[in-house]
Length: 233
Image (cartoon, rainbow, N blue to C red; front, side):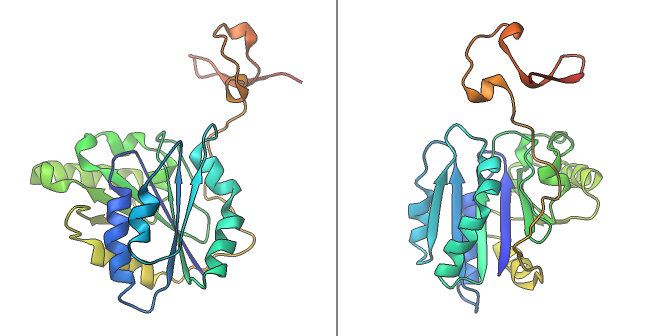
């Protein structure tokens, strides 16, 4: 079974791009299943359901959505197997630019909004630098010169990636993305490993501490000078 992981910041157009791409995949021999991971609530499962494919929704709530996605990957694979899917497509909610949800044997797709500014690709971290494909959205809202600069900034961060321009509203470019998904020869295994470590999530704030003073906090902590320390047992 193929595993496709879609990552990107909020509002970049991940769901709209996926819907247009899945419509094309359904016209082939591909049997996709979709897992949508969001934070507090979502109605995207209803949008995916209109395509007539198996859909599973997960809400991470107080947990980082990418940590949640990684932790529940085995359950997602079982869901796809149960529904006789040959391609599991997982869309994870975007929060920070440091997320790193891709596994070694997935097809990693980063969706990035071209209106976010020319320096944004250099700030995004592993969810862009470790991706196989970088999908650029909203390119029709900036000039050709700005698009070229944005493209070069992506290649500076990830020289080996494939860059695709896709319009989530009209589906332009989705056919090319579908071809890359179908052409991927990677198969998910039972011993998947992350391409890059996920952001650490071990501190007092993570377990509900609301007091602000530094004296109340334990765990992995980073100071303003960049020094990281562990405080606790």
